[in-house]
Amino acid sequence: MEVEGSSKKMIATQAEMVENKVPIPYRDQCAHLLIPLNKCRQAEFYLPWKCEIERHSYEKCEYELVMERMLQMQKIREEEAKLKQAGKQGEGLDSFGGYLMFVTRLGEI
Image: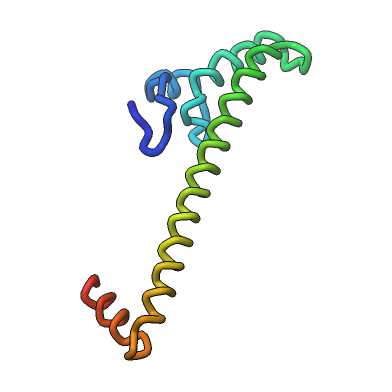
């Protein structure tokens, strides 16, 4: 299963996540790391100094996903800024006070 816009693949299947009772908001590309972490937590009575390796790998995966989404959003904002800048330059050449750009946008709708 491939998630659109992400470099990470889904490793855990829906059936595995349902079987291990992974909450729906946590069913992302890091769910395959959350399953053993939750098993370890239950086995160790949720002691904070236990399961450190599993927790670290899960948190690192989540951090990488957030950073990837932030980079994607930054690229989107840069593209929008370029389009806006190109639109402003095009308006300066228009002798009809933006009428030509308005008509072309109506044609796109």
